[in-house]
Length: 438
Ligand code: GLY
Ligand code: MN
Ligand code: MN
Image 1 (cartoon, helix red, strand yellow):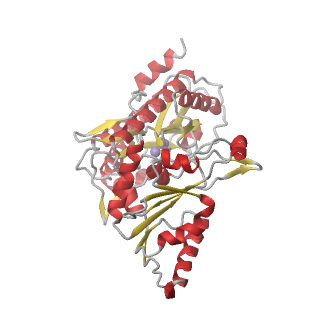
Image 2 (tube, rainbow, N blue to C red; image 1 turned 90 degrees about the vertical axis):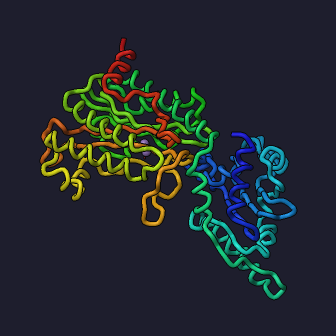
Image 3 (cartoon, protein in one colour; image 1 turned 180 degrees about the vertical axis):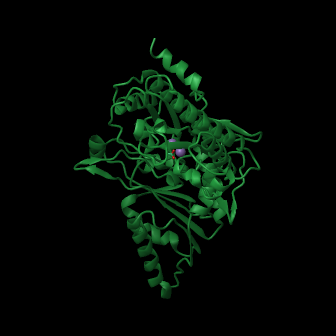
């Protein structure tokens, strides 16, 4: 993503904030994994969205209308010894030259400098409650200013959460963001195709996971957007299964929910396929029902439809199908009203997708579901989950967990399925799996 994209975002946010205001965005803290080992570092999405800066120990400050510079970055200084041990740093020079900051300061000086920036600003835009250490620091700066009131210093009177403006901006993807998301989806689709081709009874779930990660990285995506779910048979009925440590069994289905992160944008794709390459009759019946529900939902993704319409379509199709197959008993209308389908479909049909896999943005405006508009990206992911021992359910349906998840961009004309590079028609899946076996 080029520098002008980040500059444009900062400008838009500052316009929305208005003069006499200041925004403060701390980056995420480094998290320890175990002794002397840290989790791989990933900038906070809000912070990165506005800066493109990926080093820890950094704070961005936006001060609209400040004559000496509106965009300030507090960050680590260059340090040859630390850089020899731990890696390169952009330093203050890099913050100015490479990241477009108007001014840059050492992060170690923030307590001296930030109170002065808050002075005589009316409104502080800051997201409270995400980083309690930093919350305490912000409060200490305000307290300091209040103590100086007799010297004529005016402390800000209003605190506003940054979420409202920023998350609304993030909900509408620009052309550059859509490009990154298309790439994330394309790489992830390749990984799912690869998993279908290599899968064999007797493999471990984590060995299939290894193929996914390999394809992500070979495609240019260094990390998955979230821990991959690779669940065979009954494990496919656990919605957030991530152990991925069982043997894949002949006759079972395999549910894979995995997506790459590319340039800080996520893909989120689920496919379900037979471990041995052939759907059984019961598996295919349920699979075709979930697929029918997914198609019905995708039809509801276009400008003017509201957020919940895809979910309503899924609920209707699944409930009708479950009654037809004898898995639910009663009238379709009554089962929808009583949410009887939740026994087998207990999650929602999707979520916004972007820099975070469960991305930001409101789903309702006031009491009304949000109306879909071009540039929004969402997942469509109906499923059915029938663990062994399900009461009142014939044995042939047991251990079947199916989810089919695609990433869908709302366009002017309707929608674009970003993740279309991996098949979901059962015949196409079987054909692709066969190519891996010849
Ligand atoms: N992979 C997380 C989700 O589908 O929501
Ligand atoms: Mn998913
Ligand atoms: Mn999802």
